[in-house]
Length: 331
Image 1 (cartoon, rainbow, N blue to C red):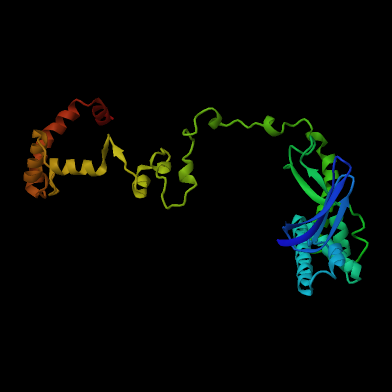
Image 2: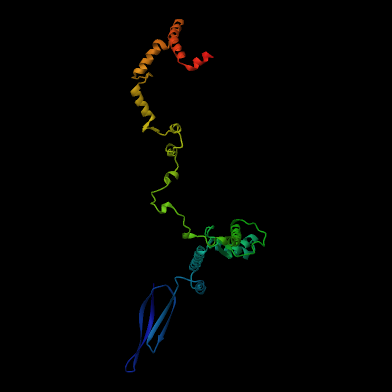
């Protein structure tokens, strides 16, 4: 702020057509630094107006040209630097709004303006300028056998005129162009699929839609986890495997509701472990006595003669009563 002392001349017109002219000193506080002032007096309205000319807080390039003679060299350089920084900030903001493809186009255009761009870059730029899309699996002909997706291609059709190397983004766009061309033939080949159900209509029955999610045909958590566990039920509970094989596999095999180990323990309690079979039978006792006293002895000549004397009367009696033998004798 600056204080300015001015001489204000005020003309007073009295009712009696007589006037008195006088001057008055007034101190005015100007809220900025001024570089000049102008004052005007309106006799009819009896108004005395002054205008102070100050410096702008924000200058444009045109303002700086206008106030160059009034500004100090240091202030002028500072304002030029502010404008340059502001311009760079605006450029950065605009650059941030550009997509990667737009930035690539802009970069190649600068090279073209300088005459240093290659044919590869020129084709790349034109492909990006005419980006387009085609659809796959989104119509009745192809939806039954193709996944719906959008392919980004280019409508630029002169990409093959130049002998360039197809690589990077150029290769991706060219492959997309060829894929979209092929999609035309795929669409024709899919005429027979027009009436096939697609989307929500293509429903495959699942038991999980009928039963709750906790009811499963297989243990999903077990089949999708990594461990060394073995499902022994596939063998232990399968009647197609012999019990001997199940035992070797480690299954628990039951015989009349008992395991082999349980049966072994019961037999040991019942019969002992000395290997001698105990029994309670009079017939077996008599037989064993016979075998011990006679059955296991070697027959002597006397023994044979005694048996012969016993057997002779029996044989004679048999001959007398056997008709076949008697008829044979008569012949």
